Image 1: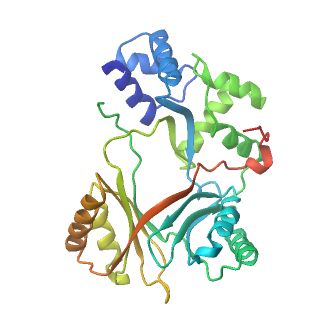
Image 2: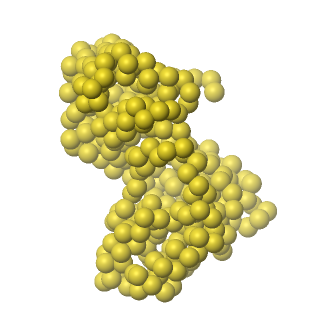
Image 3: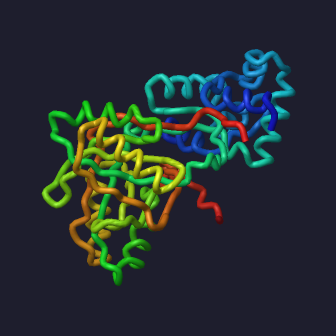
Length: 151
Length: 165
């Protein structure tokens, strides 16, 4: 990866042109030909440096609701609990943490009612009661890394 | 919210990976059965309304030497929560900072993710945050094991092709 690759990555990470010919626009910004940009982006993708090119959505703005859940799960129920929780596509992150409340997961669903329903199902299926749901009331910071650092 | 079926389908498809060609939106528009211009206009509209948080390339996770991380739950007076949240957010090592409801069982209301080079460095930053924000009570939630980590695929139930993994 050279300096030009890095400059291209910075452009297409944070300011991808929504145009019929986006790589032509990127090429103009950087003073290089469209073909050169396309060729380099293809190579960065083949090398696995670019994982995907697409949109990241704000779950709230498209009508979904999300929450952070915490549960106190005894050791003997842990495997069953994790399997049940992870079976929901709306569970995107799940961690075992060093705390009395030891399992923490995020849950995204189309409604608050659906979230309550999922938690009820999990509690019934696993025998773990009192799962806490802590939806964000305010977001002060969400950082997404944009800058491509040197190796 | 009132998204149309086409809008939901566009959102579903945009979570995938756009082909790298000189006209990347053309192939997708054809798949959706709409003109390229309409797709481009929709994406711009989604960006403007905040539905799309970011459009562009997602890179492979960079090993930047920040391997340690800890989630910290803080107990802050409700009246001071915003101020403390702003102070905590000003730390470079804090990547996420949210306010969440307190409960009797779990009396914490501010949540930060702290990233630093190792566990020890995380603890040091947490001390600095506590002092700067004037918040003493906290619970450190180090992760013992990652049980699941994936990205959300909105409207998968409606449009997913159930591809074999």
